[in-house]
Image (cartoon, rainbow, N blue to C red; front, side, top):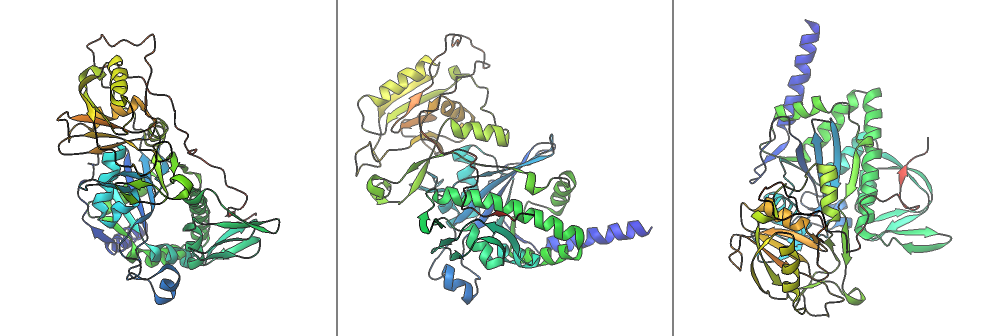
Length: 468
Protein backbone atom coordinates (compact mmCIF):
# COMPACT_ATOMS: atom_id res chain seq x y z
CA UNK A 1 0.00 0.00 0.00
CA UNK A 2 2.83 2.42 0.89
CA UNK A 3 4.49 1.71 -2.45
CA UNK A 4 1.24 2.50 -4.28
CA UNK A 5 0.91 5.80 -2.45
CA UNK A 6 4.52 6.73 -3.27
CA UNK A 7 4.08 5.73 -6.92
CA UNK A 8 0.86 7.73 -7.11
CA UNK A 9 2.55 10.76 -5.58
CA UNK A 10 5.41 10.60 -8.09
CA UNK A 11 2.95 10.29 -10.98
CA UNK A 12 0.93 13.25 -9.71
CA UNK A 13 4.08 15.34 -9.27
CA UNK A 14 5.26 14.56 -12.80
CA UNK A 15 1.83 15.47 -14.15
CA UNK A 16 1.95 18.76 -12.23
CA UNK A 17 5.34 19.66 -13.66
CA UNK A 18 4.31 18.69 -17.18
CA UNK A 19 1.33 21.01 -16.83
CA UNK A 20 3.72 23.92 -16.28
CA UNK A 21 5.37 23.45 -19.68
CA UNK A 22 4.25 25.88 -22.37
CA UNK A 23 2.26 24.17 -25.15
CA UNK A 24 2.20 25.62 -28.66
CA UNK A 25 0.18 24.59 -31.68
CA UNK A 26 2.46 23.26 -34.43
CA UNK A 27 0.58 22.20 -37.54
CA UNK A 28 1.87 19.78 -40.14
CA UNK A 29 3.56 17.31 -37.80
CA UNK A 30 3.81 13.69 -38.92
CA UNK A 31 1.53 11.16 -37.26
CA UNK A 32 2.93 9.09 -34.41
CA UNK A 33 2.51 5.34 -35.04
CA UNK A 34 2.58 2.61 -32.41
CA UNK A 35 5.92 0.77 -32.16
CA UNK A 36 7.44 3.03 -34.81
CA UNK A 37 10.40 5.43 -34.39
CA UNK A 38 9.70 8.96 -33.18
CA UNK A 39 11.62 12.06 -34.27
CA UNK A 40 11.55 15.03 -31.90
CA UNK A 41 12.82 18.31 -33.32
CA UNK A 42 14.96 20.02 -30.66
CA UNK A 43 15.19 23.77 -31.22
CA UNK A 44 17.65 26.04 -29.49
CA UNK A 45 16.08 29.45 -30.12
CA UNK A 46 18.21 32.59 -30.06
CA UNK A 47 15.27 34.83 -29.21
CA UNK A 48 16.28 37.69 -26.92
CA UNK A 49 12.76 38.00 -25.52
CA UNK A 50 12.78 37.73 -21.73
CA UNK A 51 16.51 38.32 -21.26
CA UNK A 52 17.60 40.29 -18.21
CA UNK A 53 19.39 43.63 -18.85
CA UNK A 54 22.69 42.07 -17.70
CA UNK A 55 22.25 39.33 -20.30
CA UNK A 56 21.06 41.64 -23.07
CA UNK A 57 24.27 43.64 -22.55
CA UNK A 58 26.21 40.74 -24.10
CA UNK A 59 23.65 39.07 -26.38
CA UNK A 60 21.58 42.10 -27.41
CA UNK A 61 18.00 42.94 -26.45
CA UNK A 62 14.88 41.89 -28.35
CA UNK A 63 14.70 45.39 -29.85
CA UNK A 64 18.29 45.11 -31.07
CA UNK A 65 18.06 41.51 -32.29
CA UNK A 66 14.48 40.88 -33.29
CA UNK A 67 12.74 37.62 -34.08
CA UNK A 68 14.03 34.14 -33.41
CA UNK A 69 16.34 31.81 -35.28
CA UNK A 70 17.26 28.22 -34.52
CA UNK A 71 20.84 28.44 -33.30
CA UNK A 72 20.53 24.73 -32.56
CA UNK A 73 18.51 22.40 -34.79
CA UNK A 74 18.73 18.75 -33.74
CA UNK A 75 16.59 15.71 -34.38
CA UNK A 76 16.33 13.26 -31.49
CA UNK A 77 15.50 9.85 -32.97
CA UNK A 78 13.90 7.27 -30.65
CA UNK A 79 13.86 3.72 -32.03
CA UNK A 80 11.61 1.31 -30.06
CA UNK A 81 13.04 -1.72 -31.88
CA UNK A 82 16.55 -1.14 -30.52
CA UNK A 83 15.74 1.15 -27.54
CA UNK A 84 18.48 3.43 -28.87
CA UNK A 85 18.53 7.20 -29.27
CA UNK A 86 20.53 9.20 -31.80
CA UNK A 87 21.00 12.94 -32.33
CA UNK A 88 21.34 14.42 -35.82
CA UNK A 89 22.38 18.08 -36.04
CA UNK A 90 21.44 20.26 -39.01
CA UNK A 91 23.90 23.14 -39.57
CA UNK A 92 22.12 26.47 -39.06
CA UNK A 93 23.59 27.92 -42.28
CA UNK A 94 22.29 25.16 -44.57
CA UNK A 95 20.79 26.98 -47.55
CA UNK A 96 17.47 25.52 -48.69
CA UNK A 97 13.97 26.39 -49.95
CA UNK A 98 11.65 27.77 -47.27
CA UNK A 99 8.08 26.44 -47.75
CA UNK A 100 5.40 29.02 -48.63
CA UNK A 101 8.13 31.49 -49.46
CA UNK A 102 9.22 32.98 -52.76
CA UNK A 103 12.86 32.38 -51.94
CA UNK A 104 15.40 30.23 -50.14
CA UNK A 105 17.36 31.01 -47.00
CA UNK A 106 19.31 29.45 -44.17
CA UNK A 107 17.35 26.76 -42.37
CA UNK A 108 17.54 28.72 -39.10
CA UNK A 109 15.54 31.55 -40.68
CA UNK A 110 12.44 29.32 -40.89
CA UNK A 111 11.95 29.60 -37.12
CA UNK A 112 11.68 33.38 -37.54
CA UNK A 113 8.32 32.65 -39.15
CA UNK A 114 7.16 29.90 -36.79
CA UNK A 115 8.06 26.43 -35.48
CA UNK A 116 5.55 25.10 -38.03
CA UNK A 117 7.60 26.61 -40.88
CA UNK A 118 10.79 25.04 -39.55
CA UNK A 119 9.08 21.64 -39.31
CA UNK A 120 7.78 21.98 -42.87
CA UNK A 121 11.25 22.93 -44.12
CA UNK A 122 12.87 19.83 -42.61
CA UNK A 123 10.08 17.48 -43.68
CA UNK A 124 9.77 18.76 -47.23
CA UNK A 125 13.40 19.56 -48.06
CA UNK A 126 15.15 16.68 -46.28
CA UNK A 127 12.35 14.11 -46.21
CA UNK A 128 12.63 13.70 -42.42
CA UNK A 129 9.27 13.22 -40.65
CA UNK A 130 8.89 15.17 -37.39
CA UNK A 131 6.38 13.90 -34.81
CA UNK A 132 7.04 16.35 -31.98
CA UNK A 133 8.79 19.66 -31.24
CA UNK A 134 10.63 20.89 -28.16
CA UNK A 135 12.00 24.42 -28.01
CA UNK A 136 14.41 25.90 -25.48
CA UNK A 137 15.78 29.44 -25.26
CA UNK A 138 18.73 31.18 -23.63
CA UNK A 139 17.04 31.26 -20.25
CA UNK A 140 16.13 27.57 -20.13
CA UNK A 141 19.69 26.58 -20.94
CA UNK A 142 21.22 28.83 -18.30
CA UNK A 143 18.74 27.76 -15.62
CA UNK A 144 19.56 24.07 -16.05
CA UNK A 145 23.26 24.77 -15.59
CA UNK A 146 22.60 27.01 -12.60
CA UNK A 147 20.41 24.34 -10.97
CA UNK A 148 23.34 21.94 -11.24
CA UNK A 149 25.64 24.40 -9.52
CA UNK A 150 27.58 24.79 -12.76
CA UNK A 151 29.09 22.42 -15.30
CA UNK A 152 32.75 21.43 -15.17
CA UNK A 153 34.73 21.39 -18.42
CA UNK A 154 38.41 21.11 -19.16
CA UNK A 155 40.16 23.69 -21.36
CA UNK A 156 43.55 22.67 -22.66
CA UNK A 157 44.36 26.23 -23.74
CA UNK A 158 42.89 29.75 -23.51
CA UNK A 159 39.94 30.42 -25.84
CA UNK A 160 37.82 33.46 -26.59
CA UNK A 161 34.96 34.59 -28.79
CA UNK A 162 34.10 38.28 -29.00
CA UNK A 163 30.63 37.47 -30.42
CA UNK A 164 29.45 35.07 -27.71
CA UNK A 165 31.50 36.65 -24.89
CA UNK A 166 33.53 33.51 -24.20
CA UNK A 167 36.83 34.32 -22.49
CA UNK A 168 38.79 31.53 -20.81
CA UNK A 169 42.14 33.06 -19.90
CA UNK A 170 43.99 30.01 -18.58
CA UNK A 171 43.97 26.23 -19.09
CA UNK A 172 42.45 23.84 -16.60
CA UNK A 173 39.16 22.44 -15.32
CA UNK A 174 36.62 25.27 -15.02
CA UNK A 175 33.24 25.27 -13.29
CA UNK A 176 31.06 27.17 -15.77
CA UNK A 177 27.98 28.98 -14.55
CA UNK A 178 24.90 29.20 -16.77
CA UNK A 179 26.01 32.39 -18.50
CA UNK A 180 29.52 31.04 -19.22
CA UNK A 181 28.14 27.71 -20.46
CA UNK A 182 25.91 29.59 -22.90
CA UNK A 183 28.99 31.46 -24.16
CA UNK A 184 30.61 28.09 -24.89
CA UNK A 185 27.72 26.49 -26.78
CA UNK A 186 27.04 29.66 -28.82
CA UNK A 187 30.67 30.17 -29.84
CA UNK A 188 31.16 29.95 -33.62
CA UNK A 189 33.84 32.65 -33.97
CA UNK A 190 36.27 30.97 -31.57
CA UNK A 191 39.95 31.84 -31.18
CA UNK A 192 42.45 29.72 -29.28
CA UNK A 193 45.86 30.64 -27.89
CA UNK A 194 48.63 28.19 -28.70
CA UNK A 195 52.41 28.71 -28.40
CA UNK A 196 51.81 32.32 -27.42
CA UNK A 197 49.68 33.28 -30.45
CA UNK A 198 45.95 33.54 -31.08
CA UNK A 199 44.54 31.43 -33.92
CA UNK A 200 41.05 31.32 -35.44
CA UNK A 201 39.12 28.05 -35.35
CA UNK A 202 38.58 27.48 -39.10
CA UNK A 203 35.49 25.30 -38.64
CA UNK A 204 33.11 28.10 -37.63
CA UNK A 205 29.57 26.89 -36.92
CA UNK A 206 30.52 23.24 -37.54
CA UNK A 207 33.05 23.55 -34.74
CA UNK A 208 30.29 24.95 -32.52
CA UNK A 209 28.12 21.90 -33.25
CA UNK A 210 31.01 19.60 -32.39
CA UNK A 211 31.46 21.40 -29.06
CA UNK A 212 27.72 21.34 -28.40
CA UNK A 213 27.67 17.56 -28.77
CA UNK A 214 30.49 17.28 -26.28
CA UNK A 215 28.83 19.72 -23.88
CA UNK A 216 25.58 17.72 -23.93
CA UNK A 217 27.48 14.56 -23.00
CA UNK A 218 29.27 16.33 -20.14
CA UNK A 219 25.99 17.89 -18.97
CA UNK A 220 24.18 14.54 -19.05
CA UNK A 221 26.93 12.86 -17.06
CA UNK A 222 26.84 15.55 -14.39
CA UNK A 223 23.02 15.54 -14.18
CA UNK A 224 23.07 11.76 -13.72
CA UNK A 225 25.75 12.03 -11.04
CA UNK A 226 23.97 14.86 -9.22
CA UNK A 227 20.55 13.20 -9.20
CA UNK A 228 21.88 9.79 -8.14
CA UNK A 229 23.51 11.28 -5.04
CA UNK A 230 20.90 13.95 -4.34
CA UNK A 231 17.37 13.14 -5.63
CA UNK A 232 16.13 16.55 -4.47
CA UNK A 233 18.38 18.08 -7.13
CA UNK A 234 16.07 16.66 -9.81
CA UNK A 235 13.23 18.82 -8.51
CA UNK A 236 15.47 21.88 -8.63
CA UNK A 237 16.46 21.17 -12.22
CA UNK A 238 12.91 20.51 -13.39
CA UNK A 239 11.38 23.49 -11.60
CA UNK A 240 14.00 25.85 -13.01
CA UNK A 241 13.49 24.89 -16.63
CA UNK A 242 9.79 24.01 -17.17
CA UNK A 243 8.63 27.61 -17.52
CA UNK A 244 11.14 28.23 -20.33
CA UNK A 245 10.42 25.11 -22.39
CA UNK A 246 7.87 24.86 -25.20
CA UNK A 247 6.48 21.65 -26.67
CA UNK A 248 3.88 21.04 -29.33
CA UNK A 249 0.35 20.72 -28.00
CA UNK A 250 0.10 17.17 -29.35
CA UNK A 251 2.88 15.99 -27.03
CA UNK A 252 0.89 14.59 -24.12
CA UNK A 253 1.79 13.61 -20.59
CA UNK A 254 1.28 9.97 -21.52
CA UNK A 255 3.71 10.43 -24.44
CA UNK A 256 6.31 11.72 -22.00
CA UNK A 257 5.76 8.84 -19.58
CA UNK A 258 5.96 6.31 -22.43
CA UNK A 259 9.27 7.71 -23.69
CA UNK A 260 10.69 7.91 -20.18
CA UNK A 261 9.75 4.28 -19.53
CA UNK A 262 11.05 2.89 -22.83
CA UNK A 263 14.35 4.76 -22.77
CA UNK A 264 15.03 5.02 -19.04
CA UNK A 265 18.32 3.14 -19.37
CA UNK A 266 19.68 5.34 -22.15
CA UNK A 267 22.35 7.82 -21.10
CA UNK A 268 22.90 10.92 -23.23
CA UNK A 269 26.62 10.44 -22.72
CA UNK A 270 26.43 7.30 -24.90
CA UNK A 271 23.93 8.60 -27.48
CA UNK A 272 25.27 8.61 -31.04
CA UNK A 273 25.66 12.15 -32.36
CA UNK A 274 26.21 13.17 -35.96
CA UNK A 275 26.14 16.31 -38.11
CA UNK A 276 24.59 16.37 -41.56
CA UNK A 277 27.48 16.67 -44.08
CA UNK A 278 27.58 19.96 -46.00
CA UNK A 279 29.61 21.65 -48.71
CA UNK A 280 31.09 25.03 -47.80
CA UNK A 281 30.28 28.11 -49.85
CA UNK A 282 31.14 31.73 -49.07
CA UNK A 283 31.75 33.30 -52.46
CA UNK A 284 34.93 34.72 -54.01
CA UNK A 285 37.32 36.38 -51.57
CA UNK A 286 34.85 35.60 -48.76
CA UNK A 287 32.37 38.10 -50.19
CA UNK A 288 29.38 35.91 -49.37
CA UNK A 289 26.89 33.89 -51.36
CA UNK A 290 24.77 35.86 -53.83
CA UNK A 291 21.22 34.62 -54.41
CA UNK A 292 18.66 36.61 -56.40
CA UNK A 293 20.85 39.68 -56.04
CA UNK A 294 21.06 39.45 -52.23
CA UNK A 295 24.27 38.71 -50.33
CA UNK A 296 23.56 35.97 -47.76
CA UNK A 297 27.09 35.89 -46.36
CA UNK A 298 28.60 32.54 -45.45
CA UNK A 299 26.22 29.66 -46.11
CA UNK A 300 26.62 25.93 -46.64
CA UNK A 301 25.15 23.66 -49.29
CA UNK A 302 23.73 20.16 -48.89
CA UNK A 303 25.86 17.27 -50.17
CA UNK A 304 24.48 14.20 -51.90
CA UNK A 305 24.68 11.25 -51.57
CA UNK A 306 26.43 11.85 -48.22
CA UNK A 307 23.32 13.35 -46.60
CA UNK A 308 21.07 10.52 -47.70
CA UNK A 309 23.47 7.96 -46.22
CA UNK A 310 23.53 9.74 -42.84
CA UNK A 311 19.74 10.11 -42.77
CA UNK A 312 19.41 6.39 -43.47
CA UNK A 313 22.07 5.28 -40.96
CA UNK A 314 20.97 7.47 -38.03
CA UNK A 315 17.25 8.00 -38.67
CA UNK A 316 16.41 4.72 -40.39
CA UNK A 317 14.96 6.46 -43.45
CA UNK A 318 16.01 4.43 -46.46
CA UNK A 319 15.24 5.57 -50.00
CA UNK A 320 11.76 4.38 -51.06
CA UNK A 321 11.85 1.23 -53.17
CA UNK A 322 10.13 2.73 -56.22
CA UNK A 323 11.05 1.88 -59.79
CA UNK A 324 12.29 4.80 -61.95
CA UNK A 325 9.93 3.51 -64.64
CA UNK A 326 7.02 4.86 -62.59
CA UNK A 327 8.56 8.33 -62.18
CA UNK A 328 8.21 11.23 -64.60
CA UNK A 329 10.38 14.29 -64.21
CA UNK A 330 11.36 17.38 -66.15
CA UNK A 331 14.88 18.79 -66.23
CA UNK A 332 15.70 22.51 -66.39
CA UNK A 333 19.09 24.15 -66.84
CA UNK A 334 19.62 26.36 -63.79
CA UNK A 335 23.22 27.43 -64.49
CA UNK A 336 23.20 28.67 -68.05
CA UNK A 337 25.80 26.04 -68.94
CA UNK A 338 25.87 24.53 -72.40
CA UNK A 339 23.25 21.76 -72.86
CA UNK A 340 23.30 20.96 -69.14
CA UNK A 341 19.65 19.95 -68.95
CA UNK A 342 19.92 17.73 -72.03
CA UNK A 343 22.94 15.91 -70.63
CA UNK A 344 21.31 15.31 -67.23
CA UNK A 345 18.05 14.18 -68.84
CA UNK A 346 19.88 11.73 -71.10
CA UNK A 347 21.62 10.11 -68.13
CA UNK A 348 18.39 9.87 -66.12
CA UNK A 349 16.61 8.29 -69.07
CA UNK A 350 19.24 5.55 -69.17
CA UNK A 351 18.31 4.76 -65.54
CA UNK A 352 14.68 4.31 -66.54
CA UNK A 353 13.15 7.69 -65.60
CA UNK A 354 10.58 9.19 -67.95
CA UNK A 355 11.57 12.68 -69.06
CA UNK A 356 8.68 15.06 -69.73
CA UNK A 357 10.32 18.40 -70.52
CA UNK A 358 13.84 19.67 -71.10
CA UNK A 359 14.35 23.43 -70.86
CA UNK A 360 15.87 26.40 -69.06
CA UNK A 361 15.24 28.00 -65.67
CA UNK A 362 16.19 31.43 -64.38
CA UNK A 363 19.78 31.55 -63.11
CA UNK A 364 19.39 32.79 -59.54
CA UNK A 365 23.01 33.34 -58.48
CA UNK A 366 24.87 35.15 -61.20
CA UNK A 367 26.82 38.12 -59.90
CA UNK A 368 30.01 36.11 -60.05
CA UNK A 369 31.20 33.41 -62.42
CA UNK A 370 29.72 29.95 -61.93
CA UNK A 371 33.08 28.49 -60.94
CA UNK A 372 33.23 30.58 -57.79
CA UNK A 373 29.54 31.05 -57.05
CA UNK A 374 27.80 27.70 -57.55
CA UNK A 375 24.08 27.12 -57.60
CA UNK A 376 22.17 24.41 -55.74
CA UNK A 377 20.26 21.73 -57.58
CA UNK A 378 16.62 21.81 -56.45
CA UNK A 379 14.21 18.93 -57.01
CA UNK A 380 10.82 20.62 -56.97
CA UNK A 381 7.87 18.34 -56.42
CA UNK A 382 4.12 18.76 -56.04
CA UNK A 383 2.28 17.57 -52.87
CA UNK A 384 2.08 13.79 -52.68
CA UNK A 385 5.28 13.18 -54.66
CA UNK A 386 7.88 13.30 -51.87
CA UNK A 387 8.74 9.58 -52.07
CA UNK A 388 9.31 9.73 -55.81
CA UNK A 389 11.36 12.93 -55.43
CA UNK A 390 13.59 11.06 -52.96
CA UNK A 391 14.22 8.37 -55.58
CA UNK A 392 15.21 11.07 -58.07
CA UNK A 393 17.54 12.62 -55.47
CA UNK A 394 19.11 9.21 -54.90
CA UNK A 395 20.25 9.21 -58.52
CA UNK A 396 21.98 12.61 -58.27
CA UNK A 397 25.27 13.74 -56.79
CA UNK A 398 26.27 17.26 -55.77
CA UNK A 399 24.62 20.13 -53.89
CA UNK A 400 21.12 18.66 -54.18
CA UNK A 401 18.08 19.62 -52.09
CA UNK A 402 14.33 19.04 -52.43
CA UNK A 403 11.49 21.56 -52.18
CA UNK A 404 7.73 21.15 -52.33
CA UNK A 405 5.77 23.47 -54.60
CA UNK A 406 2.05 23.59 -55.34
CA UNK A 407 2.55 23.79 -59.10
CA UNK A 408 5.81 23.24 -60.97
CA UNK A 409 6.84 25.45 -63.86
CA UNK A 410 6.76 22.60 -66.37
CA UNK A 411 3.54 20.97 -65.22
CA UNK A 412 5.40 17.78 -64.41
CA UNK A 413 4.81 16.56 -60.81
CA UNK A 414 8.60 16.53 -60.35
CA UNK A 415 11.15 18.81 -61.96
CA UNK A 416 14.90 19.20 -61.51
CA UNK A 417 16.43 22.67 -61.63
CA UNK A 418 20.02 21.61 -62.25
CA UNK A 419 22.77 23.44 -60.38
CA UNK A 420 26.52 23.51 -60.87
CA UNK A 421 28.57 20.34 -60.49
CA UNK A 422 25.55 18.05 -60.82
CA UNK A 423 26.11 14.45 -61.92
CA UNK A 424 23.94 11.36 -62.35
CA UNK A 425 24.57 7.80 -61.17
CA UNK A 426 26.09 5.55 -63.79
CA UNK A 427 24.23 2.50 -65.01
CA UNK A 428 25.90 -0.73 -63.75
CA UNK A 429 26.07 -3.67 -66.15
CA UNK A 430 23.77 -5.72 -63.92
CA UNK A 431 21.06 -3.04 -63.81
CA UNK A 432 17.87 -3.68 -65.76
CA UNK A 433 15.26 -1.07 -66.57
CA UNK A 434 13.11 -3.40 -68.63
CA UNK A 435 11.30 -4.92 -65.66
CA UNK A 436 7.81 -3.61 -64.99
CA UNK A 437 8.18 -4.41 -61.28
CA UNK A 438 8.48 -1.56 -58.79
CA UNK A 439 11.29 -3.49 -57.05
CA UNK A 440 13.83 -2.21 -59.59
CA UNK A 441 15.67 0.30 -57.43
CA UNK A 442 17.68 3.12 -58.98
CA UNK A 443 21.46 3.06 -58.38
CA UNK A 444 22.83 5.68 -55.98
CA UNK A 445 25.17 8.30 -57.35
CA UNK A 446 28.75 8.38 -56.07
CA UNK A 447 29.98 11.46 -54.18
CA UNK A 448 31.39 14.15 -56.46
CA UNK A 449 31.23 17.14 -54.13
CA UNK A 450 33.68 17.51 -51.23
CA UNK A 451 31.71 17.57 -47.99
CA UNK A 452 32.42 17.96 -44.31
CA UNK A 453 32.65 14.73 -42.27
CA UNK A 454 29.57 13.71 -40.33
CA UNK A 455 31.64 13.02 -37.23
CA UNK A 456 34.61 15.11 -36.20
CA UNK A 457 36.93 14.47 -33.29
CA UNK A 458 37.40 17.27 -30.81
CA UNK A 459 40.17 19.69 -31.75
CA UNK A 460 42.89 20.34 -29.15
CA UNK A 461 41.34 23.70 -28.28
CA UNK A 462 37.83 22.34 -27.72
CA UNK A 463 36.58 22.02 -24.11
CA UNK A 464 35.77 18.54 -22.85
CA UNK A 465 35.04 16.52 -19.73
CA UNK A 466 37.39 17.28 -16.86
CA UNK A 467 39.97 14.61 -16.14
CA UNK A 468 38.98 12.45 -13.21
